[in-house]
Image (cartoon, rainbow, N blue to C red; front, side, top):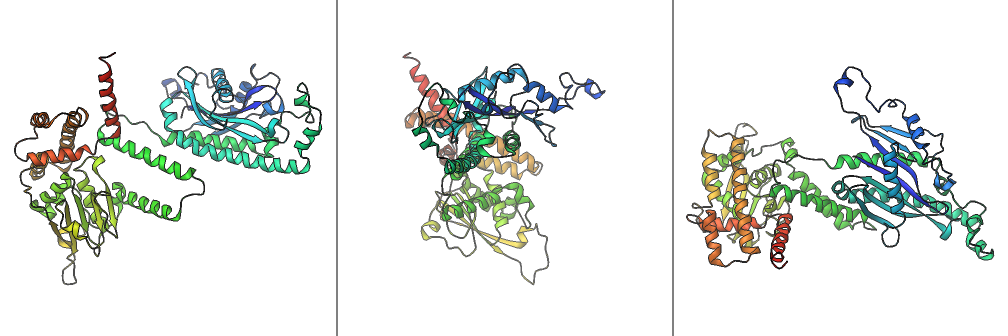
Length: 556
């Protein structure tokens, strides 16, 4: 990650100062000159990291008089260097950055973090910056000191980067881990503070002494500025901070990666990003809550993690046992009529329940069937010991002995697939992937509507599945194109009916324009309305903002 972490301090004598700074140096990119043994320009001191750090630290900007509280490492100290063997990145730490242009950037971030850019209470995180001087994530905090004004000193940890979006997206991660470092410093300094106050209480000494503003900084045994090492009594403080800051830069850079997208992101991509963000925020809230979660919450979180593990398609392939490999394979096992009935219920948004003793087989069926829907329409409980209502999930796997409630079994919005084993001692051994010989599938539903007319998407999909000349990959791409086609129709209908609020007659004209009328019209309309629930929040918010902006523009 192209960023820099620094520890800053507000000195009572000299104002805001940078105490410790860690930066990442990426290895030079290969070039023809480097391949023949030529040395890269600007990397002559590559093998002398310590000497280069010391020379930079002793620049004219750092040779000014500094007190004990303003200095972290002595001028002769070479600094700290860590090398990532995987990437070749070097993490260098000293009191000031190596490069002069970074010195002014860090200096400005230090001054702003300890003067004007603070949150209420003067402790906590804040974000500021601009394109010219970089963007800063700053966390200010106090350290106890028995000799300081108000018995505490003011510090801040800042992360400076030029990528604003990257830094904002890393806010929960940075806040969580910087709090650990800050709490460690505060707890260590508090022990030293309590010991010093027990030996010589400073509050009574100050109340009994004559006060003079001119000599106030020198009335505390001439030690107005104490170093952070003295406040914490930590012999390896700076080495420990170097390890923490180096890990933070490495971890923050590896947790988010860039992905090249061809064209605008699809609705599935937007929904996945939103769900990932919600999960990170929820985990951050749980970790930040004092006292931790209750036992019930912890049990639920473990259950959800187990469900997420089973939902991972890559892990599913590694599990033993028979599995459905594709929609075509599922159609061959169930038969064309039962497959159409099951796919029709999936596309209409009805609850699909599979009941059996093999959770891996059921999960593989869900993985195949979920490909028929947009990601935003999928709510899955892979395997459960009790029935879950339809508003919680539209894919539900159950143990074989779980009863189905009467109101569910009699509902036309539910389909049940019972999986029973056909294997017995009289049947010779069969291949593990021969699902038809191992299991029997019974599909029941209270639906009385005809399913042979539509929707049009299912009709086209079955044509592709019947064509044996098309491979499984080609069929999956055909399904992807069909889903994108119908998601575009969903967006038009959502904009027309929900945002613009048009009447029923106008909506009917739009449906005819979209090709949703004719045979299977009822199923097509029902599919479009159901898929509206799968639209991303980002798209809906953008659409509403654009409409409001268009309404204001004529008056302006």
